[in-house]
Length: 334
Length: 269
Image 1 (cartoon, one colour):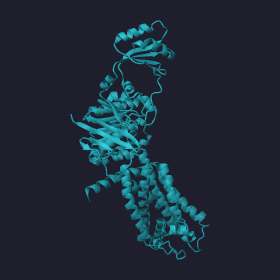
Image 2 (cartoon, helix red, strand yellow):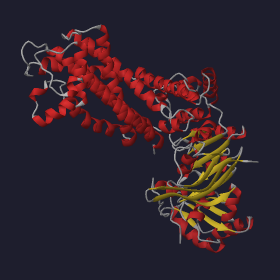
Image 3 (spheres, one colour):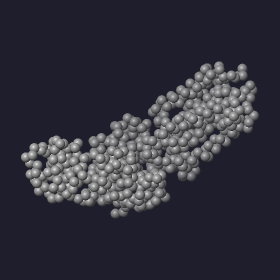
Image 4 (cartoon, chains in turn orange, cyan):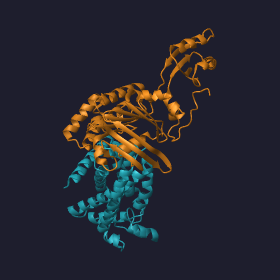
């Protein structure tokens, strides 16, 4: 298998801020790479360099064996980009948007039109094809945007946070579209803040923070790094969290994690079902109302928390800062 | 023609079409682009016209209209900057820059579409002018030349505004910033009043102001000059067509490459 994307020692500075401090990554042709990280980690900068929008200060970046700086035009002809916000012309209809982009990819007029109709159909936009994009919902715009990036059948597709700002139903729909594309053999580099999204769509993942790669591998491999399983309980009363954590503490390998809002308690444990029965035994007859109790494997949120010391969700709440704030919510007992 | 040039023209045509579709979908644009010049014609002709101290026997409508034409097309060309900044803000410039299209086409398509808008404005103003007493007293060829020189000059300003739009990036700021430049350029000129009335420093500025030359060129080409309003004895206004074309050439030679360079380097956030 050859690599469709090769990035080596990529460095980018904006004034005194270092956005990328030497990023290496490869994406095998036909696979999906999830590029994960909080806001300001450098995900978008990587995408912008690979799509020829931005010049790197140092390092090498190649798409399909073409250098993004030297062979920019050839790179542009074989990639599709869907940026963070839907880059569609609001005044043009869906059809006109796609036809325009098709023509700018230098497709003959007839082909640009037939591809436009085909993609409108595929992205459920046929009914809205002749309405200005201004009248579209957020999800529709995003679909139109992705359709535009696919019009010339690119071999490599860049999706920069394709579901940010979408409602859950639109997000699920978008995931299906992306999964279909991947099944069709398109190489995809996907950036996301949603760990669940990367877990669903990506074959391999690269986690970056402060412009550096801090972890890489398949979702399972990353979860290995965090190790163990978690015993998770949901209680009826938030007030019980402390006392319950106290009783179960000796079962845990590390500090329990409490969340007052969801009334959830999470403990890293070793072993299997015996842990559950021991936990039930310890809590029984003490008047605690346990709504849910179970063992689960760590998810990527746990991975992120372990690797960076702060949760992805919390970094996101910090907005556009390059330096995500340490975890302040969640009430971990430390 | 070389293959690259053909491609550039084809891409530019796609972008021009896109920009003109917007004009069709948002009729307000064209309504305001034409209403304000109509308002200017009426305002100066009937409100200020009486107060502006011109020698008697002069037809103020004939003096005024070439000035209004010039002011309007120069104002019209500022639209270029705001539109480019808007495309940048909405991420469209990113999309275009990631496509294998020619580098200058987004700007060519924009400036050409704005040239089209300006042409529509001029037609509306000319009709309004004819109604309030403006007349063309020259040959057909000269009159066409008059309209062309106004449009060509405005086209060159569009390229300056395109660069401003790419550097300033916020449509509202582009608008305000361009008015700071465009107002003195169009008012400290022979647009509405003869230059003799100006104090000396302003007068020198006005005499060499390219907008004065455009206005003077238009007056000559439409046959709207009058013996009663003598043309100042400076080279710029004695040779207004040449002087205007000189400025147009300078603007294009400077701002086409600069704007294209800014386009290639720009990136929205």
